[in-house]
Length: 68
Length: 142
Image 1 (tube, rainbow over the protein chains, first blue to last red):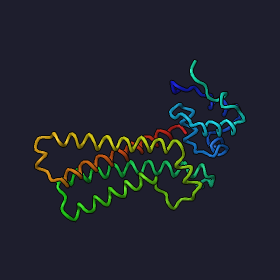
Image 2 (cartoon, chains in turn cyan, red):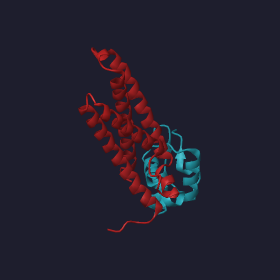
Image 3 (cartoon, one colour):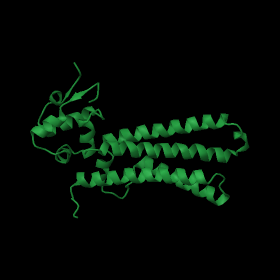
């Protein structure tokens, strides 16, 4: 997990029974983007965070949080 | 084995292939240039062509004949970030090589063309290898 940004993308995706490829299709991004965001390798841009949130029917804050 | 026609799957496969191919190109270029310590006139024109081709591949991401949708998926946010990092790695490799070459004893025995060949080679190879590594890392466990 990236030290500057915590994310619950994997949990949100699994709650909806989606694979990385299915979420990638819904959000119109590549599978490696989903993978790197979930693993904290890549910090998503604002646009990407909004697209992921919309694809999952969640708010950005549900998916991404600053560390306490 | 049948391949999926889903754009995400196609982009995934092509992106992996590109990462492996560019990594192999980087290694091959380094080996060939290391063996050709003093290129003849004809060979030196060939290495400049090869280096320019790799720079073009790095700049465009290749796949110019690929469908727009697939190409957009292959060159999305993560790849653009990896590309920036790889180009920066190439820049620093070229700068450090140039600085190091200046101080190497006997470096003034080499021609300017030879020095340029070494600097360009290491800059291009560093970029290719960095891009390949970062892309394959992004694909890991995907």
